[in-house]
Length: 296
Length: 296
Image (cartoon, rainbow over all chains, first blue to last red; front, side, top):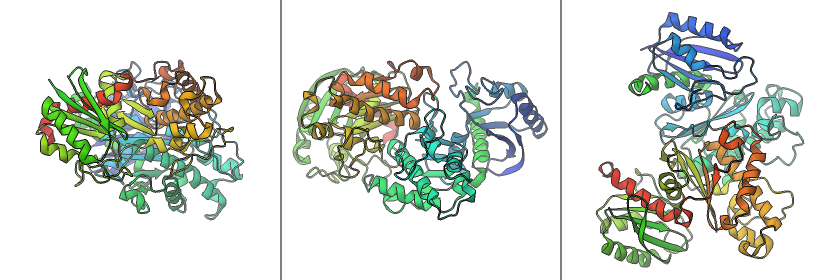
């Protein structure tokens, strides 16, 4: 079958068509301009491709409460034109197919559970560390929404003893995102992270913060796997350093073999690589199709 | 109907009988001695009361993985005789009824969702702050187990700037439990918390730590309500101070009316009061009875 997928990012939109095995057969992408321009391109693409269902994983914050009057809208965002935009309803008027709708990070977590690094598990936490830090949570076989949706990128870590950077989150200053997302690395060291050597002290500091984030996720959510994606994780030296920080933080307290044996199979990169987002949206579309009788 | 409930605490066991409305009709309690002695009393009690189902909410860590060979056992505990003890199997040999089995804090969270402060909601987080700090998580209509079960009492908070206490957690020193459970208050100030005046600086410090815990829970789990129980919460001045810390920490970032309007209906005491644990076990027993066809 033909499933449509939309990975709606803050800087670019990716639309694709895939099948029920998670294989992407076609894709296009374009910049995230004002919603009318973006949606025109999305609609044109899918009018030609004729998907049987469409899954959307989007930047937020968004309304994912099915009982809410503004379900399917972007809520408050500084992005011009997007605040309050009825994203889902605009597409529903054009395509009479089942729709999946969730945050980009929940989509990625779900895609990893269906086809990626957490395949066959009923829980995982997905962090993306890039221009921001986001968290998607899949728990007991369900994506976690709750009151809004998890915003674990803004937890308050302990400051690294050598760190003098004040942090750049407009809401919290030195929260996780304010200290460890790509822009914080660049502001702290004066160059982009991608230009820093693998043995630069920046990475020990980065692992210190991300290790705290993973530790909090383990203690609060007890996931069966933790997946770390996003541009910053392209730094290959980071993953073992983060595992070692988590090990130090937990200090043997949580007694599970997966945690006590080095965590090589527990804290991992996305199995779907940089396709995690688009495949995740595809998985949401597939789930919407499978549950199509419950949607109306 | 007659449902049995066991609230298995580290210092005392409470057994009771209740009905499907959450009303406790009878109860007994006795100290948590060695398992053989405790179980003899539990078995005698229920042999007379003849419940149609039994729910157990117990101190841990415990094995709650149905697929595990040691499902229903206590795992590693310093409590004499309890390490590896087959708690659930011992009772199953005596009573051929459906059993509910979970951690004491998950039981309390569930009881609050069924009959208490989170009634009608499909998510809540329950913290107990007493001789230790534990967290129970109910999310998207299910209790969260995952790899083991949440151990949010051991997250790593930022140190209060005026605090010189080193912390007393044997694993982490200054984790949440090491800084904010009852024994930490007593060791820091030299007297039991119950003897400190309501305006003593101890409480601002306590609210600072508990506020961080609640903030982390909100950001990681996005619960529809946060419930704070346990002996330390008998200090009535604490709750508004904690709400104010959480408000300061979030700083308006998570845009939900429940969080932006003072949180009086969002961060609350247990609706079931000090019965939260026993009623929670009762609720687990009721759920086991309702799902009795799926248990075998």
